[in-house]
Amino acid sequence: MRATAIAQPNIALIKYWGKRDLERNLPAVGSISITLRDLFTEMQVELDERLTADTLAVNGSVDETMLPRLSACLDLVVGRVRPRASVVSRCNFPVAAGLASSASAFAATTVAAAHAAGKSLGVAALANLAGRSSGSAARSLYGGFAELENRESEIAVSTLCESDQWPLSVVIAITETGPKAVGSTEAMEISRKTSPFYANWVERQDDDLQTARDAIRQRDFEQLAAIAEHNCLKMHSVMWASRPPIVYWNSVTMRCLQTVRKLQGGGAGVFFTIDAGPQVKAICLPEHVQEVRAALAATEGVIDIMESGLGDAARLVEVS
Ligand code: DP6
Image (cartoon, rainbow, N blue to C red; front, side, top):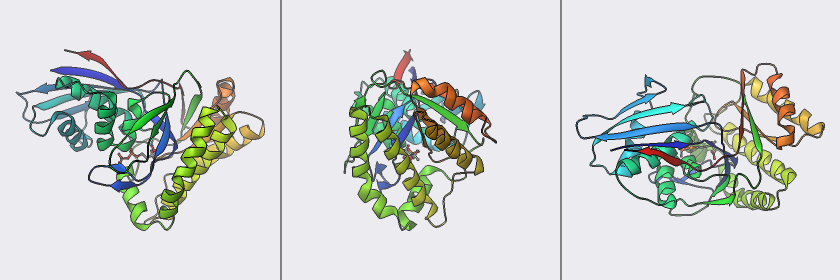
């Protein structure tokens, strides 16, 4: 059986950093994200009894590096005793550079694999499975503003606000291309084991989640901006204080932050966030998107700019 699904990446405003259970990939903290509209990953999964091994092609090229995680994801969704799969992926943005490509890839794979295996699973079950492959992937099963709740024994995601109820824009400044030095799974464990700030990060997360939830409910952009920037800088402080230190930023990342500060000084509705990579994501009010885009594009060292609105949940596009 063959099935194809599409998922968009999501960007966390209140970050997931750290695991409470490595085996089940349960996050140590809750998180809140926005799902994007214009960046996507399409995954076609074909289960075939004649195959002797799983295969993966990303944008037309064989990809061996992602294959072990992909096979583990298929084991989780289809079952450990299963036909091998031929997986074909299409993605319209740079993979593994801190643009949440694993979130959209595992969300789409989970949906496609479940259908290819003839399993009819609800969105909560799919989010649980996707989250076991990559924590942030669970959030791409939902559109708009999604919260991955802080639960002890399962992954649970809920929608806080649909994409059209608060249609913010996102401008992404690409400051570097190529894969990141340390993957987030490994980096989180280094932080958990060595960062002197880790315990405080976990302890204070519920307060940040509450502040962000309130801001989203009241459509209070300034409050959301303040808590999202604070939470982002706090996560990176946890990383920087780890041993070895984990520093995803480069000098252009910093310059983009200064650009955002200047825009804010001029009255633009914009704030920044940065994930496990050097790219800067500027979340803005739609009426300021052109100004934000132009300012980031003019920032020295910025390689490329991407833009997106907020989008909907991962979905099946074809089954045969
Ligand atoms: C910084 O979901 O990639 O983007 O569960 O180990 O696959 P794994 O981690 P992943 O981590 C995302 C980290 C982050 C913050 C976030 O998206 O919440």
